[in-house]
Amino acid sequence: MPEGRILEGRGPIPESGLLAASSALKRRPWAVFVEAPLEDFLGPLREIRHAGVLTALLGAALLIGVLLLLVHSMTRPIAALAHAARRIGAGDLGHRIAETGTDELGILSGAFNEMAERLIGTASSTRSSSPADPGGEASAVGQLISAVAHELNNPLAAISG
Image 1 (cartoon, rainbow, N blue to C red):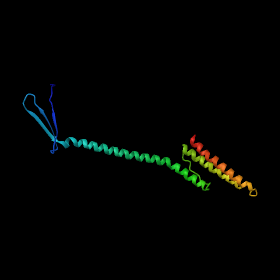
Image 2 (image 1 turned 90 degrees about the vertical axis):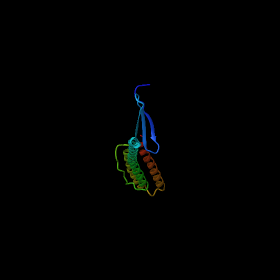
Image 3 (image 1 turned 30 degrees about the vertical axis):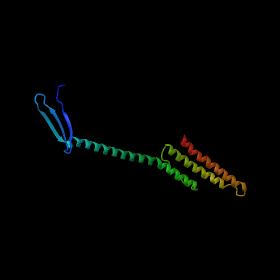
Image 4 (image 1 turned 45 degrees about the vertical axis):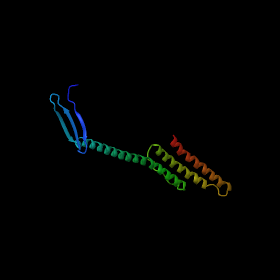
């Protein structure tokens, strides 16, 4: 047998809340028994577990908050572009979008504003066509549709690179 003392654990004593262990003495026919409250051993482990769960929950809440801020910062300019497209589609050609930066959405905002400027020019040139020409109005509408289709293609080309 190896040198040293052998400690025999008895585990928790049922219904007493105690943890017991014993060890026999080599030179004497005696044994040493130790009992300690189970809470003395399990209490710190429970505190560590509770702290770990609390830390994980706080970390998850912080992560969700950061993700919500990021999503909001990305979707706000897109929502502004959609709102501007609806206003220009409703006939408010004077509406402009604030160009917020040099990223893709800033480039798209600039292209959108350029499109609105060109649409104003196209609309004014179609209005100045001769009303006496019966085919001129249909031609003007065709030119306007062609210009709108071309101008809508420009912002899409800015996004796709």
